[in-house]
Each structure stands twice: as structure tokens, then as C-alpha cells.
Amino acid sequence: MKQSLQQSPSTDREETVRDFLNACFGLLKALSVYGPENDSVSRPRQQFETSLQNLREAKPGGVSLKFENESLSVNSQKVRPHFSIVEAMRQVPEAMFKGSIEEINFSPKLSLVDSLKFFQQWALHCSVVQKPKELKSEFSEIQVRHRDPSKLDDRLKTLEVLRSNSHAVKHYFVLMNLTADYFRSIAKGQVPALNHIRRELTEMIEISKNFPYQLMALSLIRAEKGEDQELFQQNACEAISTSLLMILLTRSFNFSLQDQLNLSLIGLLYNVGLLSEELNQLVRSDANLTQVEYRKVVDAQSKGVLKILKTEGMSRPGLVRLLSLFEAAQSSQKPSLTLSLEAYLLRVVSAFVAMTSKRPYRDAYLPAEALKLLGHQASRRRDHHQLESIVYFAFVRLMGLYPLGSMVQLNNQKKGIVYRPHSEVRDRPLIRILKDSKDSGEIIDLGRVKDLEIMKALDPSKEGVQVTGYFLGG
Image (tube, rainbow, N blue to C red):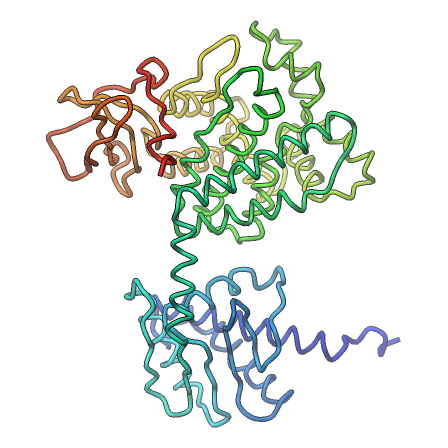
């Protein structure tokens, strides 16, 4: 019986490799802030010492950490993705990239003291360099092999691709078509797999790592009502906006990459329970909803998801998690902190997207108006929770008081588009001045130009300005 419960040798080796990778990540993170003797370093220090010894016992000799062709390996064993090393799989390769490192070999004679000094040197190097630069090891028992410069050029070219507007826009429209097709299938009672949608959301997360404002600009896109823009495409645009803002908001809370992906998918599916023709027409009708109709819509969100899951035999984890969030929000019992946080994140993002989207019975709220209204509603809600306030203020910190894409008028009577929120002063963003309705002018940082200030927000549709063109036209 005991023998059957034991793990296989390969499983043990993989766990040791994961422990070693997490220890490397933990040391880099801790030593970027603290000295080697600080208590905050004790846990990763002990984990590194233990995992290094275990690796040496499994394969006598030195231990190698290698990053080649976008693949990470320890002692020639490829590191496979696992929930326990999501952050390490992202941060360790990034640190190796900044140090222009392809491989690190730790000698069998390496002391723990020299190991800590090396990681401290590496962490400091990563904190000061902006572009890849060779890290020179000062320790004879640690051999660092640097990357071929041509491989670095390939990585930099990849960043250039991610930076380009055309790359972001291309993947956005692929995602929009996939989402619209998925919604059509749901309306017909079919529940297709989400693999292709997940792949595109993963690409969006990659873009957000270095160029988060690309996603913020894409979230401004809405389908114009017309003969060629059916309801499913309108729904898809709003769903994607929710999904993209969920990526950015969860990233600001330091969620793991896997959770960013899962919650962005949940954001995309948030209103999937409303895809029946009756409910879709009800939500987008010309008249304001009655209390009975509003209750019907709210109930349909969770009931619709439950109905879908019953047809699929609970085999869609994204939908299962979405249902649990609806149930947590509607239950009289106190949900877990994790569920509460995720529910509040979805609530504020989906409400913001809904408010800034046009409806037959009202124009879209201006982004700044929507933020103020969200804050007012949250403070007056009976079930108001302190966590909800934290989420709201985090969302304002992310978006700015005048979110990206807002059209404003300055006190010198010039008009402009909010181009970037300011990192510190939320009411003084970067403004791109409009020369006319088709061209853009200079960019002004209101955080530095003290004599200029925003007088009021303007409605771009009434001014004849297509805001997305100022971000995604190039």
C-alpha cells in the first residue's frame, strides 16, 4: 500500500526542479530589496540550498540553469508549465534576458554565501538595466554563458512586433470574430471549446506585459450599429473590452499569469447567460427596464450559465468559475476572500464597460462620468464592503480620473485626447492636442505644465472625433 502511494522518480525530479526554479525567483525578488541576512531572504535561501542539494544527489556534479529558444531547462530537463511556478516561469527568463544569459552553471563546490552574493549582484543588475546587458560573474564557482547577440536581436524584434499597433489590432479582430462565433453557438444551444479564444487572450497578456496601454486603447472599440453589425458582434466588442480591462486590473493586483488568463476569460463570458434572443432584445430595447425586467436580467446571468453547464456536464472550468462568482455575489452567506475579490473586480469592470457603451435608450456615458457614477453607486450600496472600495480605487488608479481616450478641453481652450494616465497625479494626464478632427498635435504632460488644467470632458461623438484612430491608426 505504501509503495503504491509513493511518487514516481520522474515526478520527484520535476518537483525538485520546480522548487529550484521558485528558489531562484524568490532570491532574485527578495535580494532586489533586502540584504542576504534579512529574514525575508531566509525562506528562498533555505529552499535554494535544499533544492540545489537534491539536484546534486539526483545527478552528481554541477547544476545548470539554461534558457534557450524560449525554453527553460534545469540539468537538461525541460521545465514544464505548472501552477506552482507561474511567476517563476515568467520572471527568471526575464532576468536571464536582462543579463544576456543563456546558461548558468553552479559548481559542486559552490558555497551558499557565494550563491547569495551572485543572486544579489544579478538582482541589482536587473533593477538598473533597461536593455539587455551582459552580467559579469565575479565568482569562480559560477560560470555564466552569455547569449549570442543575434538571438538578443530576435527577442528585441519580438518586442517591436508586440509594440506595433497593427499587431495588436490584428489579434483584436481575430479575437472579436472568434468571440462572436462562440456567442452564436451559445445562442443555438451549442457550447464549443474555448481553445482558440484562450490563445488570443494569451497573446493579449503578452502585449500587456510591456505595452499595457495597447490593451486600454483596444478596450475603447465598440461595434457601430448597422446592417453589418449584428448583436453578436456588438456583444463581442463589449465582452472583449471587459476581458482586456480585467487583464490590466488583475495585473495591477499582481495576479499570476494563469489567473490573469482565467479571469480575462471569465470577463469575456460575463454576460453569456443573456445571449438568448429574448434577453438580448430586452437589454438593448429602447425603453428603460422595469424592476421586473431588471430582476429577470440579473437572474438570467447565473441561470443561463447553469443551463449551459448542464448541457456540457460541468466540463467547462471557466463557466464553472463564473457561476461560482455569481452565486457568491447573490448568496447571503459570506464568500471566501478570493471569490469576493474576483466578484468585485468583475463588477466594477463590467459596469464601466456597460456605462461607456451606447444603448438605444441612452448615449454612452463619458469615461470620467462613468467612474464618478461607479464610486457613488458603490458607496450607497447596502451590501457595501471595504474590499469593494479597494477595488474601485485600484480601478481609478489604473484608469486615471480622466481615462485614456477621454476627450477634454483645457483652460487655454485647446481640445485634446487623454493619451496616457499620469503615473502619480491622476487628474493631470498626458494629453494629445487636436489640430483638427483628422490630425493629432503635440503631447503635453499636465503633470509638468502647471499652468494648464482640464476644464471639462467633451463627448467625442458630438465633436466629430473618432478617438480610437489616435491610438490604433498607426
